[in-house]
View 1 (cartoon, rainbow, N blue to C red):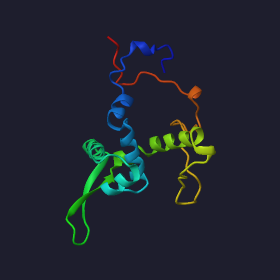
View 2 (tube, one colour):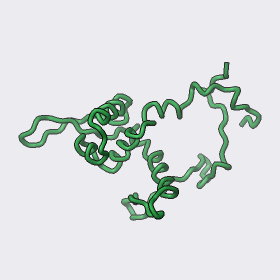
View 3 (cartoon, helix red, strand yellow):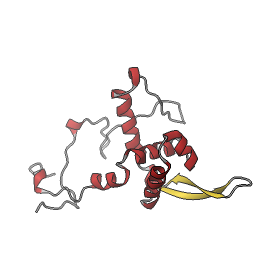
View 4 (cartoon, rainbow, N blue to C red):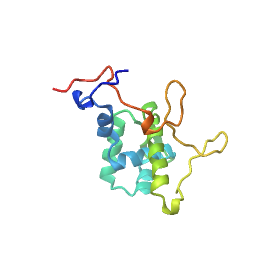
Length: 159
């Protein structure tokens, strides 16, 4: 590790956080992912749960499909025309910890009377689920003061 690196010597143009926010950084996109994690799959169900304008909902769903976070899967109710439902892909499922971290932070800092509106539980044992920061060596529950950023293989020098 190079402890003497200067963040300002490197460009932020090649940033994974910025790229991710281009796809999911808009409120409705994250809320759509939340609802997909909670089991919704159909346009009408997303619309009902979110109260989002239909055109915005269509745009956000299309963006999430375009970037491989959701995929359209055809279904047909008896006597109805074929429609599409939206299923989380592997890439979409990988965003669960990020959405859970936002939920956990909101429960801690913004919930009415410190009472969370939703509790996510482990299906295996029923215990509440929590997101923790850990390292590859097995250290868990790391705080912001326990971590630092360093240039990676994709780091670009600032001009």
